Length: 477
Image 1 (cartoon, one colour):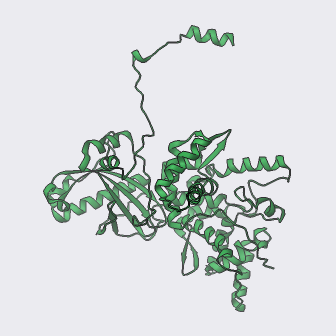
Image 2: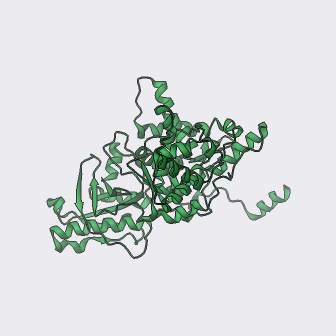
Image 3: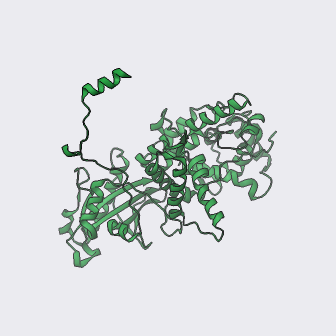
């Protein structure tokens, strides 16, 4: 009745690492693409090796590990780039992420599109012939919704055995309701079914749950899953999808059909789910708990916790405004506690164009010799499920700065700061980067220009093609 059947996925990293790798991958790809495939491979591998600090006594093994980041995770699992005619392009999914920096939204898109069989899997054709056909994450959300109506929480073991490793479920022979009813019935009978085998047999199951947790749609506690009801809009979107109808499916086993399928899969998986895209955005209050503490740390890894008061806004601001409001409240309260006279000098100026920073503050008690000197703070915000830690040896992050912001960083030097705000399920964290311009010169950060403004003057124009010449050429053609 519940035949155990193994459908694997591309191996990722830990939850925290995938949350951290995403902005690094997207930043690199957005920077170097479009470019020829050989150039893309060498540039990506060189740049990601700086992030991952891959070390191995076996140079070949190290190179393989680095390449795996590009081919397996950034490419096949995350879908951040696509290939065409020897060129590599940043995918729409990559461009959208760079724009909004919403990690859970990105992983929701992955979970929405993920299916068995899929074009990332070398076993696709075997699974196809076995009748496998399911969007498993959509199925799980539906099963959890029905279970919640029965006041039942599904355990990891039950999701593994009855859904993710069950051939009948993977073939869409059971509905989510039927599976939950079987689980409830077996519980009452005292029947405990579990996936046989060791860690090898469980790894692909754990990694699928990792993706679902990173989407912020579910929470995992004491080996039981529960829906994150503050993601009700996205959950409703998942519930509206038919889990047994796959948008990309192999029509036949002919070589022509296989080539067409792989191309169509790439186009589908690397695109953005424009239908319902807004439904996948992460609400500001969906990353629980709503903490009243903010942890700030410099690049040395030293950290301290400060208590701040933050009023929940009447409307849901965008991510940039949310981060700026947080830092404004933090800086104003910090100064107010030590010297209320200086609090008036803390100003939110992000709405003013061309300044190159968002908050103007003062040092106050944190530097008595520069107590009334101005601090110029640029706020960069992102959302992710896992709390970050700069103490990890593999810690990495990427932000995008405008030309005005980088000019301001050079101009204000010692008095310029980047406050990297990270909203997570453990509350907001802030990584403080002091004097990024100097750190770039020292090599502790890497700033790479990605856009150039080209000013063209009269003397630089040579030659001028007149409209008569244009028409002459067009006519001749």
